[in-house]
Length: 282
Image (tube, rainbow, N blue to C red; front, top):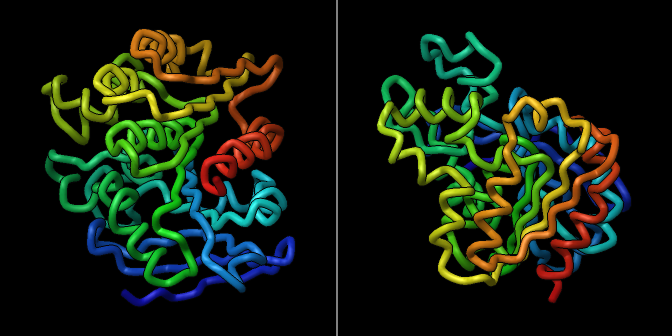
């Protein structure tokens, strides 16, 4: 599959690049950011996938989070895909900020008119890693995932639905129980239809209840002054209760004074890179 380089910038002796490709899964052109640490010039590196939140593209994380120095030090390739298909000319895809363009929710849609293109779950799980492993000096056996908000939800469900695929998972202010919040009800209802039992396959709080073993060390940071926490969109308490019941280790840190923004992410990003490096470089 042909990759077209869109940009390349030297950063902490490595390179932050953006590529475009034709996605077979999403049936449109997609972009992703990839950071190649200095170590990638001489050997294979583990890969850490970042999933962004509502309204984001591949640009938000690579320009705002300040992850590069830690990724360079730990020798991690970091991949940041877009958050939805683009330009599919589906009626209604640009009508709201929390559904359609920029809001793929990391599910495989089953409803018309979304089911042809809105297959972000399969894109992140299968197509993108194959593309990355075929074109860059990766170690396919060493892969982890993290994300923010809608992307935190994506990271959690991908790790929980695919035991053993990812060495570690972490999230910033994830949407933990989408079946119970307005964002989730809108997205899951729109993409998957009105049968609520189908939504459970994409809800971290539901998935953790049937996770087969406890070999998953989850790190979650949540800003205490996050407006979406107080609005009941994130519901971390439900997820933590389910993890506790299943004896799945989760480190949950409520960070005093922090909100939902990239200032919050930038503050704690090094902790998350370190968390993943511990498993990826083991």
